[in-house]
Image (tube, rainbow over all chains, first blue to last red; front, side, top):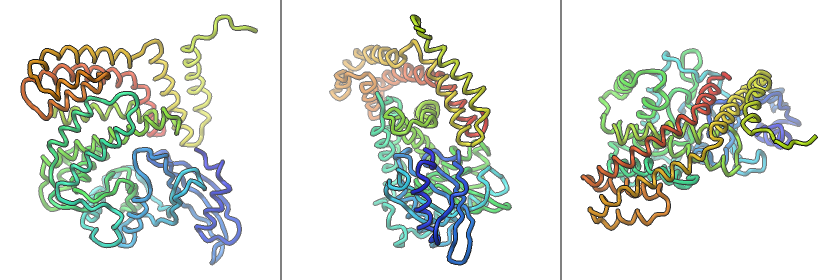
Length: 321
Length: 147
């Protein structure tokens, strides 16, 4: 999708959002390659503000027909709630829930300068912030939008059932017997959490920005839930963090951060759930692609090569591990 | 001009790959356009590899044969839920039911089911991963900003 076709509607929308006096000029748009669940654009805008001329960048994060099984509702509410408690997230400027402006719901947020390229310099600060997230008091009204697990056993069971539900709803042709078997193993071996906390759901390198050797913000809050913090630690170690540091290095850093040893069997369970997350959410690409909802070739890549690769990893972890 | 012998689809796809790689991709200055150009090359290579064979049908019939080969083992066990799998039209659904049953009923029967079905399904998975290699290469290169 190009924003060019919707430029008139977008300019009017941004003018209202930013309280521009008169016309707003859209001086540039750049789609970011990173991030497959949303189309992310950096927009250069210029307008007459309340205190004079303004030139700034804003970010538009646009839904992709339910790609990867999420919408913006929780994401926006979570970002706003975390912003209120001074957690480092970009400030949400607006949330458009209809398809009227860009053909899909989207939200806009402040542009925060920085880099998402991995840097070992900021790893420990990032882990401390993730630990801080797990310590945020979610029992305030700010987080009422998140479903509260009814027991310590609920997050694991709920995660597996939710993910497999997404998978089954997006199967094209035939289901994978290997996925079904792995899901049953996970159901039979679900672990109870020691505590319920806010969980980012997609943490690690690539989903935070750093600037001048400090973490600027944490990104991508679409999978945030109340759950087991081991969900996040496993994701950092084996999913987003795996290309950058060895497993034992991540574990040592995390243990230093939280001040106690990690329970390896719980960690292994959540590693498997996170691989299942890839398997199941990637399946949404397949259906959107073959139904012609979104013909973009990145969906074909995720539906085929990426999906098959994680199915193999799931089998290795669950059935052969 | 008529075309009594239309061009071979393989030639059309192969030449489209060359054109995308040598003409279109080098001119794509925008990061997102370059990413898509890379992926389209991978998609066409993936499609090219699938011409002339129906791998889906081959996988279906191979799995159906493996499911059928377990009839004696399942009959011997005599479990009603497990026997119900043979009533499924789809071998993929039947295999799913049998493997799920195996997770819930460990023992010799489960082990026999797992050994037979997993071997076939792993082979199919590996074949599909191999077939999708051009797509994976394009995705990885595209994410790294390369063509």
